[in-house]
Image (cartoon, rainbow, N blue to C red):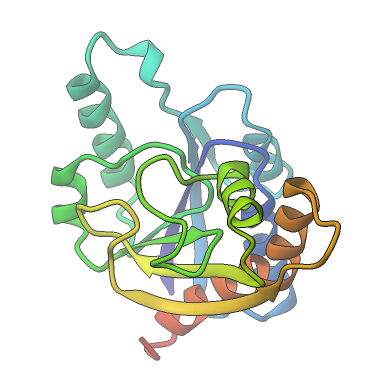
Length: 197
């Protein structure tokens, strides 16, 4: 049984997709051990508690320095003896020491087809705003392993999503979540848990 921890910052829609996939059997051989947020008011923490998953907050504002926060976050993650860490809308850069310690055991979901619309400053709704500004016809989502760069780790899965006339950033964001993110993130977790990756 693969021990999985999920790092979040917001509402937890990708977390919910993972929980639903575990409950439906689309993800097997997985135990959801903890949800850790860097924001106290993240609704993802409520989703975790509602599903009997331990939920914690490690908030950067509670520490005097970023180094102290990094140490605390690493200690909390270490305490769960995780086999896989899933960044499901975690809007902070992980410390290099944590990435090195969990090399090829951290995955992230990004709301575009990497290498397009990724890197520093490209997160959340900003990605979809830039997609629409640029006028591309196809966007999507990418699951990738995390390395020391921003959205630069090896790609696991990608899924394309059509950009439609009249799309707003919010409408496009929802379509990318429903048609891509909520499908390929659970699929990647299942593949890793069952030795397919």
